[in-house]
Length: 209
Image 1: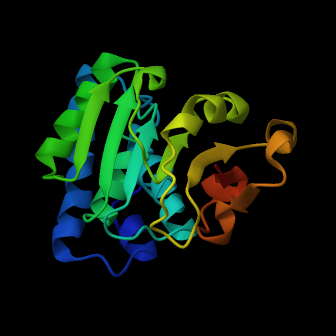
Image 2 (image 1 turned 180 degrees about the vertical axis):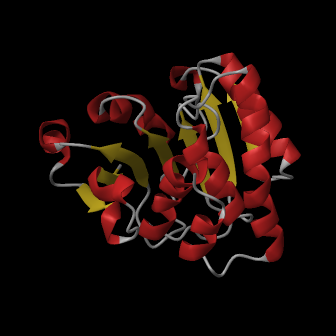
Image 3 (image 1 turned 135 degrees about the vertical axis):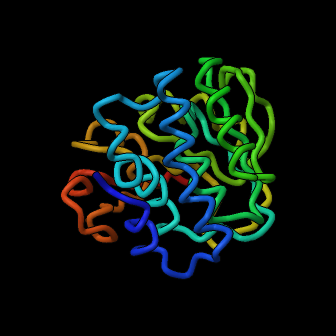
C-alpha cells in the first residue's frame, strides 16, 4: 500500500498546506468510496500511486501559469482535476461528468480539502460551452471522439508557453488512435518521470487544438 510520501518524493517543493491537502485525500476517498464506488475496491489501497500521482503526470509535462482555466472532462471521482488543483491553487478548474453520483464525490472532496479553485457540474461535455486553455482527461474515451467533443471549448487567447489544447492520460498502444493527429500531437511516456512499474505503459498525450 502506497502512502502520501510518494507524492512528496516527486514534488518536494510543496508547501505545508498543500501537503496537508494531499494527506487528507486518503481518508476522504476511503470514506466516500465506501458509499459510492468511484475507485475499484481492489485499487483504493493504491490511491496515491495509481490515481493521485498518475494525475500529476500532467504537471511534469506542463507547468500551468496562474489564471489558466482548465476543464476536466469525465472527471469521475475527481481525477486528474483534484490533484492538479492542489498543485496549482492559482489555476481555475471545472470538473464535469455525466454520472451525477461521481461528481458529488468530487465536489464533496474538493470542499473538504478546502479547494477554492474548483467547481463541479453534473453534465455531458456536449452541454459545456465555456472556453478553457486546456482540456484534461484520464482515459475517458477514444481520442478522436474526445477531440470532436471538446474542440469548441478551447480558448483562442494563449496564457501558457504550451499552446492551448487537449492533455490526456492514456495507456497502452496508441498508434492507430493518434494517427489523425500525428502533425499536432506529442506523446510523453510517464516512465521518464516516475520510476514505479505502474507507469511503464502510461503516457501523457498532448494535442494542440
